Length: 393
Image 1 (spheres, rainbow, N blue to C red):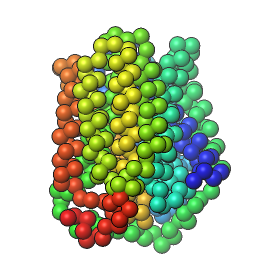
Image 2: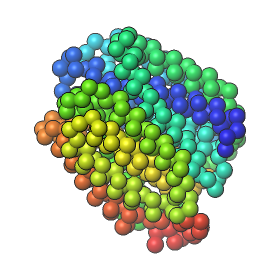
Image 3: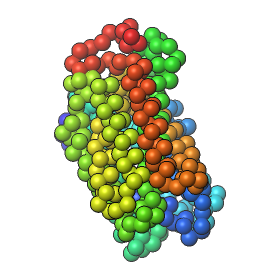
Image 4: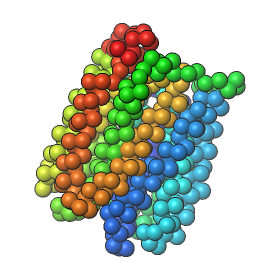
């Protein structure tokens, strides 16, 4: 797994993600304009919503035309948009439009870059490799907000925009140096996900419901945690992200391959339970120590759920449709983040952040329980292959 191309692509993915996680503290920029939480949620969530409309299309193109060029196109688009952030002077249309444009580039580049990295891993270690790829993203979640706080203190938000642009350029350079592993499909033929033909509508909806609600929960945590920390009040919110990412990284490295051995669904429900209970716990936090502990527990749950859930979708759609499967998984995840941010923002406007996290935890638990009960098995149940016609049973 650790060949030169994989490492260089992974570094490129890391800096691509870093350019985005710097903006996790972007809501603080709008406090000077007395923007409502609903406005802030919409500005932050539109980034994910924009990616929704582009990922499925480019997911198919990735499987035909190859990964590298599509990744570079997406990063190049983000590079072109980012300098315009210096023109923002309110919480109105301009930041909303720029976040949407950035989301388009993000939707294209992230899908292609993840697929590039996964192509370089052994097929039998797909969940573990997806976990390792996700470690790069988690490192950026830990370091991005922490670095962003220092940059804003020293140079203001203009320095934040410039740093994000620099990271994008580094990512572009790294991915330019990688080689295409999977040759483009010049016949323009998309293998159809045969397993879905054997499923009724309700199980199909359940397959993609969990990524949607998982995205909504992540949006509630990521986009509002800085404001929640300030309301407690806490001096810094960076340690939360450090604890979250450190825990998730250790979990993915040590336990990321569990679903390769025991099956996807056997790992998914415990992951949902941990995340749900932690959201309820977060709603009661009143000190920095408990705040950091909530970050650590949440990272443990996230470290378990991502490799299992992403490879579950790949198993259902088939590894021959990997680019499309990854794009579809990320699309539904982003639907959750995009819709969940303004919805949970509205809940916090009416009831406060504590009630918002309590409600989020209860909802996620109910969805996870229904998924575990009714969603079909994936192709892998431990080390045993399940015939396609038994997937719906």
